[in-house]
Structures are given as structure tokens and as C-alpha cells.
Length: 516
Figure (cartoon, rainbow, N blue to C red):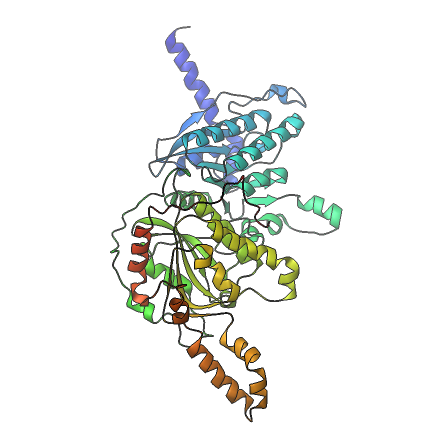
């Protein structure tokens, strides 16, 4: 055969590869509001940069009628390309081929691209849309899942791993995204669940709709499994592109510097008035964050989960930073079980990938109540504390208002190896709030007073003046400086600049035993 004929055959085969499961199945995918695997990849990567791997490989199964049904590339598209000009490795499950099911070949392709990502120090992004294990291949598909889970685990903290759930992800398959760093989900099409509605009904008698069981908003608000939710495929992929701008390629790199043009010495007059004079009155901590960071650009993570705590990415002086902050609008910024898990996971991610931590504290304490105690608030709260104490990245904290008891300690305090700790003049730092402290310390004095309420209010005022202020902590060296709120941005940028070559260590060990 002449070379021209061979090239013509190559073109024909490549066209066959691009069609996946065929035109009808592509149309069915579009009818569900979903893009195909290759369409998704083209939206994710920089134009023309994607290089596909193993496009001609096919499954080897000869059972249950599959012998006559072969599709080039099988049910997954793998390869590499550029995202925002930087290398990234990608696998995209192809629902048009056997419902995106995992075969021995699909698993091998997935593992191969994951290994390449780790060897080259670049993120791995999985676009998930699969019916689960390929039943016809039996135990081979189960072995394949195990191989993928092992790589998720071994490469955790080595390269960023991102899962994008754009279709079904069921059964054992959910444990791969669960191990990865961030999960994106698309409303209406992205679903995760261990057992489907029919199995649940047969075992427990409970009836539940698919979206109610494992839809995007369920995982964003209730389970906390999903970090980001998008309306459709294109929006979701743009969110992934945005997230990657804040992250380094691997744990061997520093986060990228992005010159925003925002003056590092910029001060904001409005910061003087954001914290109300009345201690019990709420305010929006997001406004504090956006007024301080470069150009107000803040990408919040886990926005709909545990809303009393805010976490996310921003830049200060061009440097990527991880933001952790209380949200006084929700239960006064209290730390509960879910907030502890949310904060601990985020702090540990930032520490893995050399992203400095900036903390804004306004916290009354841990959430009281039998539900929290029985649910393990001690264990969960310890995770948050553990993550801050273990982190070796630069850690800078600003206390804007209250910081009481153990919650003061956990929020990047000096005792947990915090580097720089600032407080606004509005800060109250004490073992507990003035009301609670007075009720305990001066209980008998209040009871003996002819006007107990008047006496209590007087004592609360005196306690707040003498003890619940930042200057006592500053006099002990637990606060490095009490600062004008307007100077928060330049103070943080200068502190991070000073800490850019920080070196901190941990005792030699295999790994710690975080209280899971």
C-alpha cells in the first residue's frame, strides 16, 4: 500500500475515533444537555493544544456479545494540553461508548495518564461521566478501580488532582473523586452516590429521587462532597481554568505570581466601618476579604457548605494565598463539625502546595449542643487545630473582632506556629465572651446586688474594657501588632514578602495520625 493510501486510512481512523460511540449517541448526549468528552476537553484546554494518547486502543472482552462491538479508544479520552499556558493532563470518560463504563483498557489508560502527570509534575483533571464498572469484564473492572484509587492516594499532595462530575458517578467509582483535591459538579447532570434509589428502596424502604440523592446541590450543601457547582458544562470548565490560575503545577513549585496592577500600598477607608460597634451585630466577612485582596478577586471554595466558615483563593501583591475566615452572618462565625472539616481540608491542601495562609478571625467558639457533642465535635475540631499546627507555609492572621477560648487558639495563633498575628482595635481576645465570663466570675456579686441586671451590665463593660481587648494579648507577645484596619492590605503583603523564604520543619516520621 502506498504512503498516500496509508495516510488516507489514518485520516479515516481518526475520524472514527472522534465519533466515539457514533452520531446517534452523540445526539443523545446533547439532548441531555451534556457535551461529549472531546467537546469538553476542547473547552478546558487552550485552543489547539490537546494531544491525545492511545486513540486506537480497544477493549479485549469477548463475553456477553461485546466481541463484535469495538470502539477505538474505548470509553475514555486521555492526553495532555495547556491550560492557561501551563501543562495539564486530562482524562474524559466518554458516555457515548458503553455509557462511559470502566473496562480493563479504560483503567489502564487512566492510570497511564495519571502516572505521566506525576512524573512531569503537572495537574491531573478527570472529566467524569460514567455508568460505572463494565459488568461484562467482571473482576477486571474492579481491579481497575483499585489501581486508580491507589494512584489518587500516592499522588495526593504531589500534584493537584481535580475531578469534574458532569454525568453519573456511582458505586465504587465515587471514591476516586473523593480522594482528589477538588470536586466540581454540574447541576442537573452531575450525580454521585454509592447506591441508587432502587437499591435504597429495596434495603431500607426509603424512596428518594436521583437528584435529591446525589445531585450537585445536595453535595454542595449537605454532604460537603462538592466544592464547586456550575449551571452547565461550559461554565464548569471555565471555573476549573480559573482555579488552576491560583495553583502551582506540583508540590515542588511555588504558586504562580500574577501582576494584577492593584497597588500593594492601597488602603481602604471603608474597613474602618465594617465591624459594628455593637458586639452582637453581624457583618459580612466576604466584604473584608474582597476589599483587602488584589482587585477584589476571591474564588470561594465550598461556598454552600458550612457557611459559618469561609475558605478560598485570592492574591495579595500578586501572590496566591489561601483565605480562611469566619462568617459572622452565620451563627456569629461559630466553628461546628462541618466547619472544622471544611477548614482542616483546605488548610492541608494549601500546605501541600506551598500556598501561604491568611486568616481573618472573628470567632465566638465551638458550637455547643448535644448534636455536636454526640457527632464528635471534639474529634472534628481537633482536625482543624491539627492542620494549622502541622502547616509549614507562611501563616498570617488578622483578628477583626472576637476570638474566644479554644477557637482563638485554632485560628492560626502563635501557639500553633502562626508567623505574624495582627489585631484590629475592635478585637476582643479572651477565654470567653464578657457576658459568659461575668456570669461565672461575678455570680455571687450580681446575685447580692439590689439591681442584678444593672450590676451585670456594669461588670460586663468593665470586663470588656480591662480584659477583652487586643492589648493584653499584644503585651504578652501573642499579637505582633494592633493595626489600623485601613492598613490591612499593605501589612499583609509586607508580611508575606518577609515570609517568602520561610523554612519550617516537622519531626522525622512516616506521617502523623490526624484524628479522622
